[in-house]
Length: 270
Image (cartoon, rainbow, N blue to C red; front, side, top):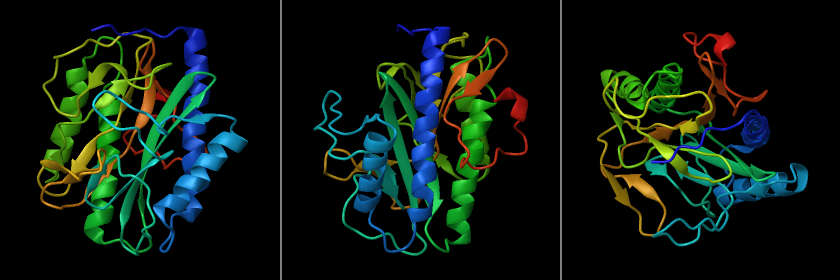
C-alpha cells in the first residue's frame, strides 16, 4: 500500500477543491423540494461546476475497473439507495430522503463531499437516521490525529451507529484522495481500535459512512452503479474530505452553508 503524503502546496489546492464541492451543495439546497427531479439537480450542479466554478465534475464518465462509465455529474441516492444512485427523471416526493454526492476537480485536485436532505416533511425515523449518520461521521473524524489508527475511526463509527440500532455498510468505504479520485488508504467505517494504518500528517482521505435503518446487506440494482439495501430499509450517508495535521485534522469540505457542527466537536480542531 502506497499512501501519498500531501505537501503544503498540495493541501492548499485541496482546500480550494473541497470548499468548491461543498459550495455546490450549498447552491443545490434550496432546490431540493418535492417535485424536482434528480436529473434537474444534476443539471444545476453540472452547470454550476463548469460555468461558475470553472471546474470539472469528477463523476461524469468516471470508469473504475469493472464499471461502465458513470453517466452523470453527481450521485443522488434516494431512500433505500445506499450509494451511486444515478440522477433520472423521477420527481422527489414529500418525505423522501436523498444523499447528494459531489466531487469537483479544480486545477487537477479533487474535492469530495456529500450531504443528506429530507424532502419536505420527513418522518421522525427518517430524520433520526440522517441525524445519527451525520454524528457518526463526526465521531470518526474526531478520532483523526497523528499516531491514531484507521481502525479507531471505524470503531467509533460502528459502535455509535450500532448502539443506536442501525447497521453499517461494509462493502464501501472512505478513501485517499488528491490528484486521483480514489487513492490509498481505504477508510473502513467499522473495525477495532489500534488496527490498520497509523495516521501521519499529510494524509488526505474521506470519511463517508453509509448507515442503514435495517440490516447492512446490500443488493445491486442492475444499472451497473446503483446499490440498494437488501431489505429495502432507508439508508443515509454523509461525507467529508480531511487532512491529518500535526495536531489533529482539518476538514476541507466545509462552507457557509454546511450544517452546524455537532456539540461534541471543538470548532478549533477544524
